[in-house]
Image 1 (cartoon, one colour):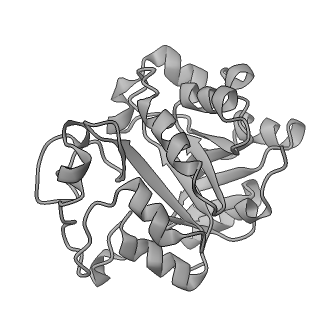
Image 2: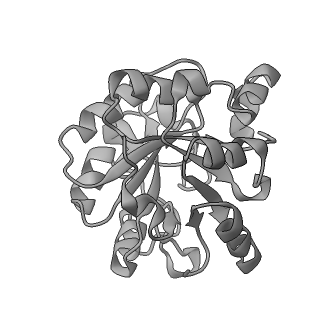
Length: 250
């Protein structure tokens, strides 16, 4: 499969072009519109709801971005889409993935990240594939979970798929991972099963063997995340083919 040219053409806005001081919050429709206005592709996150639907939201918990507490996965789609985003001056609420796509309507490319607890649960992945069947705009899908990438390879081989990697796996979300899984992911030992079309790697961890050899031997493009400073941008331009950025206009 050929990689879409846009994937490496213009920097990608991390969770949209958000700016908290202006009341434009990550993964909202307002952040998406801001990215579109500047001509940037958008990276976004999708989470599973209690009724097996998909919403655009990064965290597993509601606490950081809303005035509510609890897990996203314990709320239904109708409940979640009524919840306002804290600090959003435009009155943004949690968007369903379907409504978000309807708003974007192909006006800019999308990098859809499927969130995972690394438990072999493919309900969200299946729902995302199903929703995207009716979407006409440009997009790719990526995930930290190699099982999700492998599922995409088997069940939706026409979709450009990417694996998100790093070397440390020390965030809160990584608490679901065993040391063995961390080793497997950091070293791309799942490559035979997942066969990603591109990599998305933590900027502080490049260059490393996984990204260097993928570019050199596999001709796989590497995007890097999340670029926030001029120094990180220079580093990304030297060791990667693309960057996911926030906090400045490249």
